[in-house]
Length: 146
Ligand code: THU
Image 1 (spheres, rainbow, N blue to C red):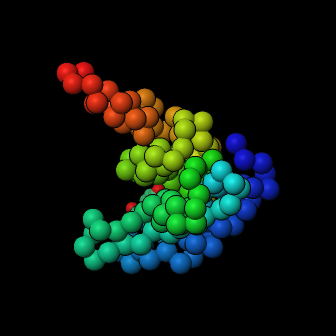
Image 2 (image 1 turned 120 degrees about the vertical axis):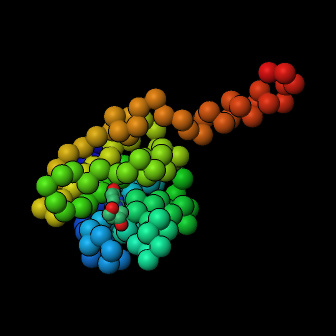
């Protein structure tokens, strides 16, 4: 779990990105902020599309920003959306987070007023499939019949 100063910085970054969300179809603006292994913060917002399935979630944008900046691990991610219900990451984004995070990574859910709840990735995506699965497969693939 990041310290309070880091959470505040993530919240501010997600809030700023959310103001730029492109969500003309749903009207639901989301901001996200990733904290990487070096302590850097990368923000993203949702970017919708007239061809609805081509739209991208805020988490996707924040993860892309991290990768483009040279970050390799997600220590924590904060997602900010309005409404009464918690703006938890969709199933596909939970898997995208998993690619760069372990089960202990914090997934912080915020509303415009501030932090609402915190989960671990393991709570949101238990018994997940990840990069380790394929590493094992690759080493055994070289042995015929295994
Ligand atoms: N959305 C996100 O960006 N992140 C979430 O965690 C939940 C949903 C976006 C996708 C779409 O642009 C809009 O919110 C409504 O689903």
